Image (tube, rainbow, N blue to C red; front, side, top):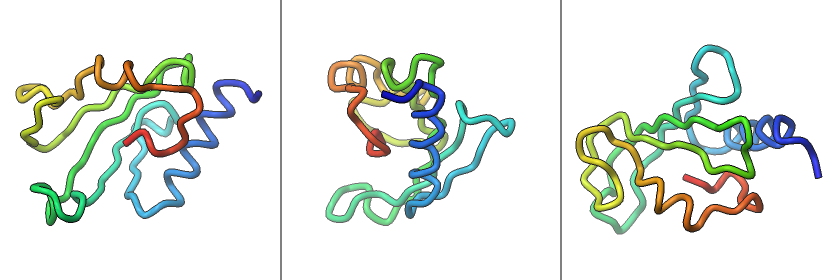
Length: 102
């Protein structure tokens, strides 16, 4: 299996080649913003959402930290900080996930 840094770079490249808008923070590969449209047939349809993603040094063995920049009302997102509940991510996180951790 490839090293965590190689996997991080590979997953980020896949994300950047997708339909998502990706904006790097400080020219690194561990922190970036992702913009995406709300899913069809959901209360979020028609919305544009921006999240901040931080990949830990141990990624993909440790889950990313994800937080919404714009307001979103969802039971798994902290209303004040925009952080996605870590328990939700950690309970289902697997190093086998690809770019679809969003």
